[in-house]
Image (cartoon, rainbow, N blue to C red; front, side, top):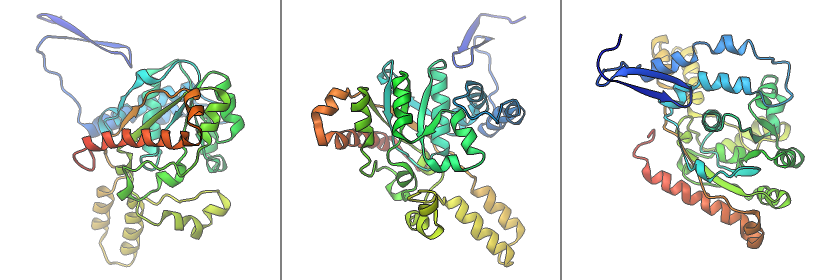
Length: 323
């Protein structure tokens, strides 16, 4: 039986209550252990998912990912989201940037949204190449991805759901590390037409920090041409993060006996697939479709300018590459 005055702390995201005496010390797992602890049941849980069904969003899978990625969300990437109050009820078009190659930021945003709106569905337009990959063409729809077409986008908004779009696409996600604080939607103004056609507000948002999880060297656009990805997959750039470059060069050096197996192992340990960079997302104020219509041709630049302003504010807060 607990002695002394007790206090309860509730974790609203998970719904459990911890009761402990005032002043009692609690042992907190290290970040690395917390990440591994969260992932411990992932493989078994994924076996229960019906991977033959790619018909649409699967809340069960999203709940599994929420539990499995808790350590990554809370401790490794230290995900922070601001401006939830700016997201209105009903259909809304969320226009965001790619801070870096989207693996980390999109999964962390998925977890953050599920925690904030467990009963509200959200979708995101996904590039067509994802639907040409055997596993991803099933997994992407299950977490809310829909093909990036006008018809699919309009259907989501007509149902009254939230839809996220990332106009910059692969061009923005593979930009060099030196341009990490630049919002560049590359003139893709389809989101403005989509907002006007469906009479839904636009909520601009930006994410910072993902750029440091997988730093990109220059030359990714040229790589798309050389590899044929531009022609066959419709990709304007190919992601080749520095970690992968280091692994390839290390493997070549190991095979040529330039470095030892121990040095190669140290290289792998020093270049994890994702670096532990703190990520922050901020949602701006909603922009009514009527306001965008009044701006005319300046609507695209207006939204992009707001996003750059939000990015500048977040960039001013960062004190190092990873935080």
